[in-house]
View 1 (cartoon, rainbow, N blue to C red):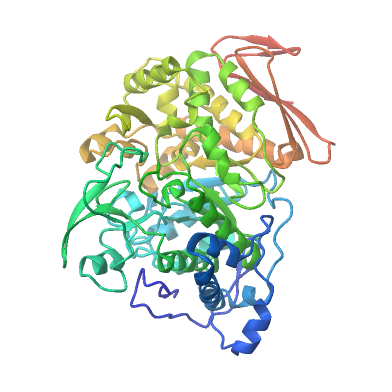
View 2 (cartoon, rainbow, N blue to C red):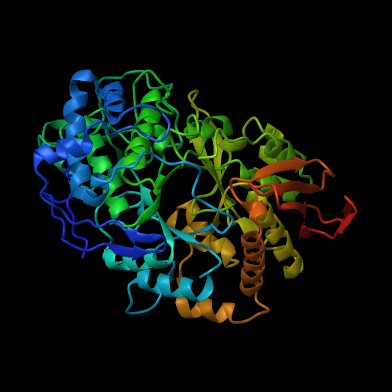
Length: 603
């Protein structure tokens, strides 16, 4: 139904092919049509005259483009970008927005993070099975779904994208995504740092197709690349045989994930085309995967460069103008100080930033029975404006990042987490340092197992209480909650899958036959049923009180080292809740309250 070709030729043959379809009804009203219309150039110029200022930066699209590519190139590039807007979002192009005010989220918003094929039914597209499963179990409890990359992909469980504009036929079709968008706000992944080595663009590069000759980053000779920040203990450059000889090509994450050369404006226009296509397909949230590495300059760390921030500002300005209800979220698994820089000034970059320090800090608190480090850190959390907030989570398809808590936890505390994860059956992923040494980068383990040793003879009810206490901390904090499928449904780790594949992250990526999962959930005494029930109870309490509104106030209190305490107040000041979380196995008395081991009390 949603056949489409890239204006930038990442997929297809470089032609535009859009269908004349009417607007679609989603959770938040009418979604934009992807139909195309013929508009006279004179009218088009009038439509866009003086339009282009984003939500708060004060920079026009042309100014962003001039910063990136020079003044002479900016005008023609802006004209081409506006033509892409006309093709992808014709209705929005006729009704440009002046940006947004306060963030349009409430305490009723929370997202599920899931793979498209998380649950399977024989003879049915997995996306359709997922939609039916979510209707049965989470409708009303969660407002949105982050469907992890559902595009054709050659590796990395979806993050080595072959074609940005298609749904993997093994998962379903755009019509299945459309049906899901009628019930939930959807988050799409924009995997813009790299593409698959099997993509049309890279295959064209290998053939020396002039369209793609400058789409990727090649390195000649032996320049000093020691400053380049490496998120993996893998080679930065990969040799490829091309029509003009062997070339060393930049591959930040793997040999199958080839970095795009965004210094070439043709590449950026192609990515912006994909961005707008996702909006047309119903994306409410767009996750900028690994965006910190986007712009490369030899002689620099090639992370967090000013040009990368400017590209995000350009995206924000563009979306504020043509799709102001669409929110950007940056996935930057880096130290907290660098991570929050992607809020920009609070009006000009991402509206949402992953709160990457939260998972290791909560794990540390429950592992030690001491919440002091978490309390100190959370007390210092600040937002630059009411237009942004944190995306709070404890688990995802990836592991638990260690870099975000460097400088917050001591080296010995981090070593303690590493040892705990290994003792509980998990794996450790490492990154390469400039001096050639390696450091822990990620803890690969299911979060339930990280908290409770699978081999321990401990009552499962106590383990479930510990787990729910951790999740309650995440839900109590100011922000938008994100809940991984395996957390919501009480999974344990799949060590066998990780060992068999050699991919540590697969310890937390198990897929299910729908009937098997339904059978477990139908047993009220099962771990899965108990965890799901506990989650739903917390989500219901959260939805019921405006004190949990992302725009409300937050005060972190130091009452007892064994407690994490936070007072939440609604934006209008009328509702206040004190949220107490016992992170220890002891009974704690504080503020006239007695909390049993791992007990949660919101009052």
